Amino acid sequence: MLIAFEGGEGTGKSTQAARLADRLGAVLTREPGGTAIGRRIRSLVLDPANDELTDRAEALLMAADRAQHVAELIRPALDAGRVVVSDRFAGSSLAYQSYGRGLPLDEVEQLSRWATDGVWPEVVVLLDVPEAVAEARLGADRDRMEGAGDGFHERVAAGFRALAAADPDRWVVVDGTGPVDEVAERVWNAVAERIGPA
Image (cartoon, helix red, strand yellow):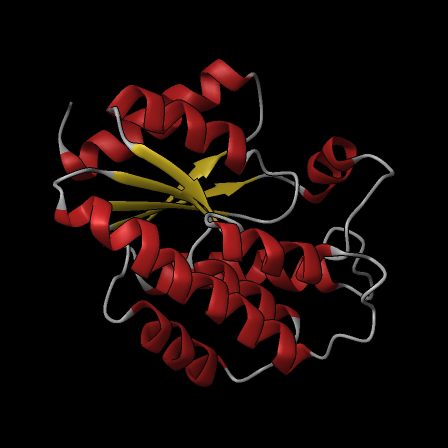
C-alpha cells in the first residue's frame, strides 16, 4: 500500500509522514528527492537562483522525479509487500503546477499517471493548517517554492482542498494545527479508519 502525505508549505507533512511510517513499520520516502537522481532534481527545482525555470519545465522535472522514484524505490517496495509512506506524491503536482501555476489540471494528471506507470496512492493524507500558522512555521529562509508570491500558496491550499473534496474515498483531511503528538494521533485515527489498525 502507498500512503501519500500532501499539503502546502509549513503544514507538517515531513514530521507526520515520518511518525506514521515509524508506527506502521513502513518505508519512508519523499518527493522530490527520494532517490539519488531525485535529489539532483530537487536541488534544481527548489534553488531560489533558478527563477527563470518555466512552469512547464517545473512540471516535467517533478514528473521525472516521480518516474524515477516509482521505478527505483516505490514499486520494488510495494512488490515486496511493504507499506510505503511518501512525503508528497502526485497530489502535489496537481495542487502546485495546476492550481498554483495555472497549468491544465487534466494534462498535469495525465503526465503524473504516465510517470508512475499506474502506481497511485490508496490513501492520501492532507494536512491542513491556516495560512498564518504555515507562515509562522516557515520563517524567513525560504527555498524557491516556499518563497513564491502573488497568491501562489493560497491557490495551492485551495487546490489541495478541491482535490480532497473531489476524491473523498482516497483523501482524508486532517487538522495540522496543535502539538505534534496530537496531530499524529489525528493522522493515525484517520488512516486506521481506511486501512484498519496495525
